[in-house]
Amino acid sequence: MTKHHEITLLVRDYECDLQGVVNNAVYMNYLEHARHEFLKSRGIDFAEVTASGIHLVIVKAEMEYKASLTSGDDFSIRTHFEQEGRLKIIFHQEVVRCHDQALMLKAKMTATALNGRGRPFVPEKLLEKML
Image (cartoon, rainbow, N blue to C red; front, side, top):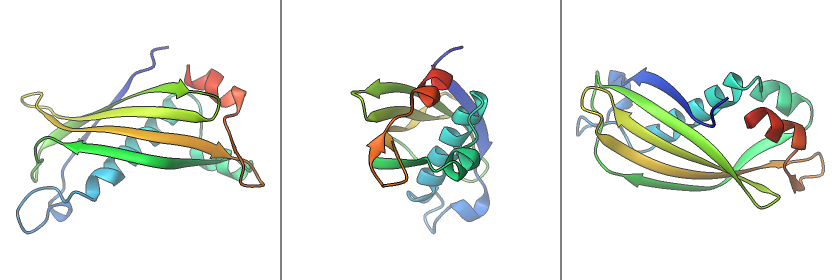
C-alpha cells in the first residue's frame, strides 16, 4: 500500500466569498475531509477510533496559499504522511486544480492522538494500518 492518497472534489457556490474565490477557511474543511478519507482507505474509521477512547487531533496547521479555486473547479487533494518522533504524525497535503494541475495550496498538518487522560501518544496499531 502506498503512503499517498488522492481524492477529487468540486467547489460549490456557497464555499466562495464575495470575491468569487473559495474562502480561506473552507480549505481547512477540504483538508480534514481528505485526511478522513485517507484514514478510511486504510481501514481506520475516525468515529470508531474516537469511540474507543483515542482522540486524533491536529496540534499544528501550516497552510501556504498559492492560488484560488473558484466555483465549479474540480480539484484533487493529495495526502501522504510521515511519523515524526514518537508522538507526531505529519500529514502533507496539496490541493491541485484538475484541469491544469496548478497547485492551489500546500499544507503541513501535525497530528497526534490523545488517550483517555489527555496524554499524547500514537498507537502502534494505528501506525501499522497507515503504512
